[in-house]
Image (cartoon, rainbow over all chains, first blue to last red; front, side, top):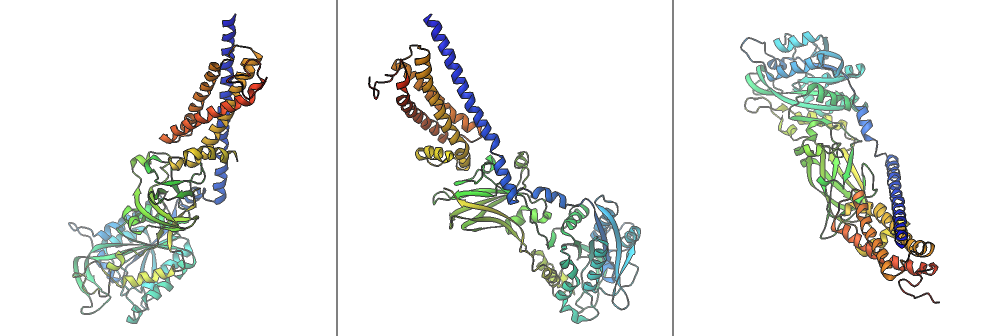
Length: 450
Length: 137
């Protein structure tokens, strides 16, 4: 009797315990399910949660391309007449690849091929030709006799034509200015600027790719002393591919149509407002140091943190960036290491390291969205709230100075130089003076932790 | 409000959560959940002991050793809950986690004792368990 009673009691006790516990755990689940909603809406409100879709929508499927090949006498050496047993020049190989990609590639919509020359009055002429005509010009050389290249005028005419047709301009030239009046050399930068004025007005970006090719034939230097022309036999002379158009379309051309880009690249007017980024605070691969945590528990991406550096324990954490929209040369770790800056307001922030995603990171779902990781150190706060920003400033690449010269008369002694290239580039840069100094900026808000 | 109360209650003894990157998980989820469950479960077990087992059912579990049994049962639950909370929210375990569980046990002992003092006068068989004070009869 008594034992039965005890048994019943214990059963009841178990039942009560079970009920109590299950009730409590349910409550916890309810709290978990509810909570993600609030931070998510907050993020949307700040507008930080939406960069990914806009970035995807901005990349066009197909672009219209106009290819302009300059055919003055100075270009003849790049395109010597083909003969059996003679190897094609780098210029010929690359150009053939380029125009065939434009002609048949699946990223190009409408296409146009133009041979750029000047008439007797030194006015630029753009001859619309077929793909085959351009191909045979590249393979078997230039037949016409075209004296000089009025560089600014040619750029202007090409740009205007492309703007009228809504196409991206791809201009291939040696960019050796050949004005009818030597005095124009002095105003080269201003002339370049005014010839490209439309690009500024229409918010177009310019990519400049420099390459060098063997040159076989008569070379016409800009500086005519001591010799007006020289005969070269395989010395390397630079040539340039300028791609002008809306930023996204220029990128389609450089990444998908041109593909194998030379190491010498320069980008002007490129700006990225919606780089996806986040502070990575809970990932095992990027363990933070010191007191730092995301202000909102479930924010993704986390763009606001609380931190509290101590003297013995400075705060360190990693910011993940998705730089896949940027030109490839800007995505290289060496470039980023050299140029990336971490600045702070209300804090002394500095950059510890930049790394690219490796295989194990690409395999982690939460991290796969980001391809570069910047480790940031904050040893001290100077205010109770502020910002920490990872920024990439617009920089003029160093190769431009080393590819520029004030005397191009003897390319054999001083190869791979173009007369007054810096001045030409100065003219281009002047177009974008009023634009932001930054290619992108990823800003993390912070508050002092309580 | 409740979040702040429980965060304050635990951080008063334990200090800032470690690892620090999970601070908000502790403050917004783990501390309030654990604290609320501690209150509810402790109150439930005290009511069970005094009003179900020793009033409605007269089971004869009125001795101090029985009371201690329930005190320990509550303490064990109070040790398990913080750990399940921490692991359940995908927070890295750390010695802080076990210190937290230990502090929760201490709180459970205190709370069980306080609830016993407050509620035992309504019990029929166990109104003097664990001791007569402060009831007078």
